[in-house]
Image (cartoon, rainbow, N blue to C red; front, side, top):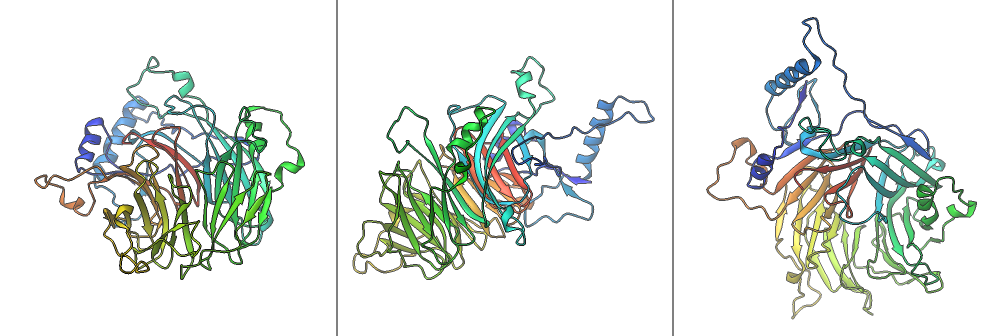
Length: 495
C-alpha cells in the first residue's frame, strides 16, 4: 500500500498558511529514460485499470480504490519522524502540483544551473520549456564518460485535473509530450559545481544574443570555462552542426591545488568575474578582460580554517562577497581590501555551513544551511564589527532559524521575486518550501501530531538524495532539482 498526503484544495492551502498541516509529495517511481545523449522523448505511463468480474466501469472501480487507500492510513508523513511500515511507499498527490515531471540521465549530476532564455518573463502558459547546464558524476572507474550537458526540456505540460473540461484552457497544448534534448561536452573528471553566466558578446555588439558561459569546477581541482552559446542555439535551429572547436574550453584555470565545491559568477560584472573556493580554504577571484582573456589574482583570500563550501557575490555591491565554510563561519569580504582580511567574521554553526543564498530582493538578508540540518536567515545589518575590536568574531542572533530537517542541508535558494519564500533541500531526501511571512496565532490550536512542524512549512517534495535546487526565475514558482535518480521539474499550487 502507499502512504498518501491529503488532497490540497484552495481552502486547505489557506489553512496551511495559517498553520495547518503540510502537503507531502513524492515523484513517481518510474522516471523518463535518457537513452540518446543528443535527444530523447520521455513520458509517464498512465495507469490502466480494467473492469473486474463485477462488471463495474473502470472509473467507478478506480474511485472506490482511491477512497479505500485514503481510508487505510490518513496519517501525515513527516520527514524524519514518520516511519514507513514494510511494503509502504510514498506516492505523489497530483492535486498539490500544477506541474510535475521527472527524467533520468546516464550518470547522476551533483550540480546544475538554469540558463535564462529568450521566451519571456513571467510565463504561465503551457507547455513550458526549461534550458539548463549540468555536470555528471560518472563511475570512478569510467571517468572519461563524464560530460557537461547542455539541456533543453520542452513540452512540459500542466497536471491534468479531473474537473477540467476540454474548454478549460488550451487542452491540446497542455497535453503535449515532454521532450528532452541534450548536447554533450566531454569532461575528464566529475563535476563538483557548475554555474552559468550570460554576457554581451566580447565584440561589444549588443544587438546579438547574449553569450552564455559556464564555469565547471572539477574533482581534479581544475575550473573549465566554456562558451555554450552555440550548443543552446542548436535547440532552436534543427540541423545545425557544431564545429569540433565548440567543445574546447575558453580557459582552464589551475590555481587550486585541491578540489572544491564553491563557485559563483558576479551578477554585476557583465564580462564575467568568478569566485572559486577549495578544500584548503583558499578563495580566488578570476576576471575576464576586455580582450576576452582570463586573469586570476594570485593572492587568495585565506581567513577560513577549513574548506570553502559556498561563495556568493553581493547582489547589489560589485566588490563584496560572502563565504561559508566547514569551520562553521560566514565571512563577508571586500575584494578591494589590501589586507585580504574579511570585513565581517561571524560564527553561525558548530557544524559545517554547507550552503548559502543571498536575497536578490532584500539585499541585507542571507540564508544559510548547515550539516546538522538547521537552516537560518540572517540580517546583515546586525553583522557590524565591534568598534573596539574590529577583528573580533561576531555571534549574532538569527532572524529565523529552523531545525525541522534532521540531515544535512544540501541546497538553499531564495525565491527570485518573493523575499519571504525559501526553498531548502536536505539529505533526508526532501525538498521543502517555506513562507517566512506566516505566523502562528498563539490562540490557534494545532494537531498534536504536528507540534514540531513549523507553521512556515508550505510544502514537502520527496526526491532521492537531492543535491541541488534552483528556481526557474522566468516561470513563477517553478523549481528544478537534481538527485541520485535524475532531475525533477515541478510547480506546486501553494507557491
